[in-house]
Every structure is written in structure tokens, then in C-alpha cells.
Length: 183
Image (cartoon, rainbow, N blue to C red; front, side):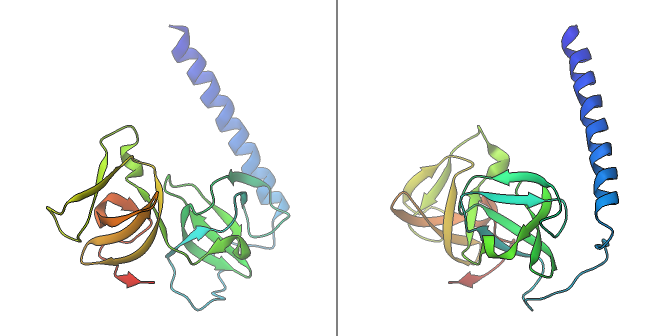
């Protein structure tokens, strides 16, 4: 019986901290408005990229004066750029977290997360040909991050632990549905 009460208290405290943080951010950051968007690269928005560094700070606004909301500790993790402002990119991760990252910490190298929505679930098969019924090259655990070299006709070519093969495009986060590319 005490667990639900404790959970409620923690959620209330978290809500109060979040509300306080939002007020502080609003007071600290009058220079940036939500509608401000300067598309500096000329590249399409949204688009997927990956983290270039092992430690990447995600901030609540586009500048070093904004507090760090999240720190990523995995080089190569895919993120989606959803907005640009000067040298800052607003990104979204596979869990829906959004924030601002300095452009120099991002890479155009494409990566994907294997079925992050299935964590703790069934393994995902990587096959030798871009079609159903191919010979299984590896079984991948959900949450594995892998470089993506190409996607075509609903299949993406990836490499994991020295094995190269194809995975159904619907089984990865970091590639748009029906997106075709070749690096």
C-alpha cells in the first residue's frame, strides 16, 4: 500500500521540479522564441544523424547558457534533427526526448537502433539478402546500435560485430519508412 503513495509523491516532486525548471528557463532565455528557425545548412528537416562524441550534452535551448537536460554517453547513437538555429540543432531521440545539441557534436553518418520498442523482447533477424526468407546471418538484441550503409525497398544493410547483412526497415529506429539511400 505504501508503494503507490510513494510513487505519487515522487511524481508530484518531479512535476514541481519540472514546473520550476520551465519557469527558470523562461526567465533565463528571452532571446530565443519557439518560432525562430534559421535553416543554416540547407539540408532537409527532419533528418537523421548520429552522435559524433561519446559525451554529448542535450540542452533545453540553443546555447551554452541553457542548462543541460540530458547527457548521452553512446557515440553513434542516432537522433533526428527537427529544427536548426544558428549552430544548434534541436534533436529527438528514440524515446521521444527533445533538446538542443551543438552541430559539431553530430555526424551525418547514419546509424540505427534495432527495435528499441521491443527491449527485453524477441531477437531481430539479420539476413544475407534484402528479402524475406534469406539465410539468417545474426540474431540481434533490441536496443543494439548499428551503422547503416544503405536502405532500399524496405531493407537496410547494417554491420554488427563484423557481420554484415540486411534487416527489415520496420525493425529499426533511425531510418524513415520507405526511405532509400546509399552512402
